[in-house]
Image 1 (cartoon, rainbow, N blue to C red):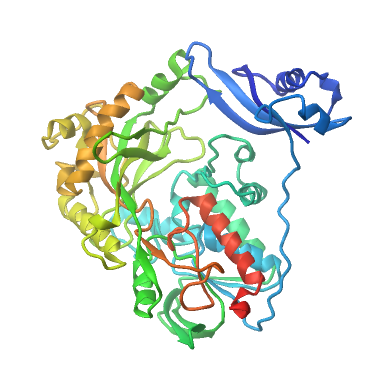
Image 2 (image 1 turned 90 degrees about the vertical axis):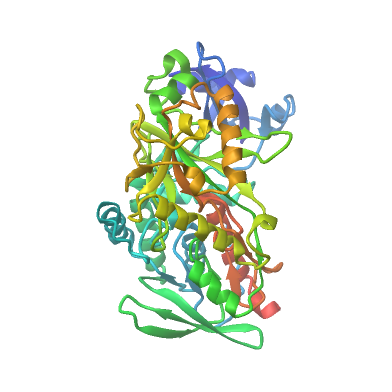
Amino acid sequence: MLRINEISVPLGADREQIVKAAASAVGIKPSDITCFEISRESIDSRKKNNIKMIYSVNIEIDGDERSVASHFSPNKVCFCEKYRYEMPECKRTSRFRPVIVGFGPAGMFSALILAHAGLRPIVIERGNDVDTRTKDVYGFWTSRRLNTASNVQFGEGGAGTFSDGKLTTGIKDGRCRYVLETFAAHGAPEQILYSAHPHIGTDKLAGVVKSIRKEIISLGGEVRFSCCLKDIYKANGYIQGICFSDENGSDTDFETDTLILCVGHSARDTVQMLWSHGINMERKAFSVGVRIEHPQELINKSLFGKEWNNPLLGAANYKLANHPPHGRGGYTFCMCPGGTVVCASSEENRVVVNGMSEFARDGRNANSAILVGIEPEHFPSEHPLSGIELQRIIESKAFNLGGRDYTAPAQLVGDFLKGIPSKKLGEVKPTCTTGVSLGDIRGVLPKEVTDSIGLALVAFDKKLDGFALPDAVLTAPESRSSSPVRIVRDEFRQASIKGIFPCGEGAGYAGGIVSAAVDGIRTAEAVLSDCVDDC
């Protein structure tokens, strides 16, 4: 198979035009192509009066493909094999069923791999199934009564279920393709297989995660909701079993020698319990900041020019970073075109915000996090869990400043840059699901963070015209972009108590849906290799 990169065609080009361009790129006729598929699709809007579509494609031809590729730069044309995920050999001999804690991307994919291997994994998830969870979440946004077990952070699908469902990742691992193909096979839009910025959308994610759950069950696995890990049992440095509570509050002991921890970045009580058992952990840098909302039309016009409302382009998105020569940098994260700012609290009397988009991305506002990194030396203490303490301090301040009813504190960009509290909204109407309370968000975030956000706003406005729009709304705090603690694991992916496998975002080893899913796959592979017995 030949991979041909950087094929440029006019906006709106059809499949036949792309095939012709691919054939021309390697000096063959379109009829010589026996198989054709789009590998990647992106938009080149650098020249706003002449926006192009850029493609990478895979083709098969009659003839020596390696010879054809040898005449070109490998960056332009290369020979490649089609990726196929192959299940590793199952060497596990244990009579115990593996237990997975958490049913976000890491837990879902580790369970899927183990189920395909015939190990009949048991998943316990503290939150509810996605349908019940959706009612819980929307009920909270309406009533302000928080269900601490089932919310934006906890439940089937993990925190990503109420997000944009972004599938971009910076990791280079062939398993990423398997993750995308699995999502597509379970109902995700086909575009995720080739889009440069793939996303599923929160409205479609529910059906996808339910379908994956059904496949796990059909293969002999179990997924138990409203079940929270309460304790672990260990002896001689090995896991012996667990205790978990069910929806009725009853405790159940379960014997196992394999515990995969996919608890997510917000299961603070679980992390505390594991720490009390002496499991090695370390502080980890994390980021904190705000959500910024602009009119989506402004972003479209800034990035697409006269084509701003062309339906072929959809809602524009951006990714920006500021690296000042002196001082702390800032960057945008999880940009949600046409999306909504959501209250993502999981603990009582604490406010957290995040972003969410449906697949169509057709809301009136664009929103994105503006984040600033905080290193461990700036945590309140040297305790491994001190980053969690810092998060809680910030989130408690936000709850109090917002009015103690889960309304989120907010400020207009113009007022923020002037250093004065906001008293009334401008043209941008905020979308936060529990509403906003105007004031000064400097009362929520550390000074080094707000100083860096101010610098970033000015820098970003030079890169994206209108970014520092005075009426744009800043809502605080975005404090759960990643975990502030890492559960240390060895070369066999095990914690200091053998048979426990820390995995995914909550353990400090991933930074998004795809990377967490890949970490889940690799952890399942470690279990299949029977590395517990090898230790």
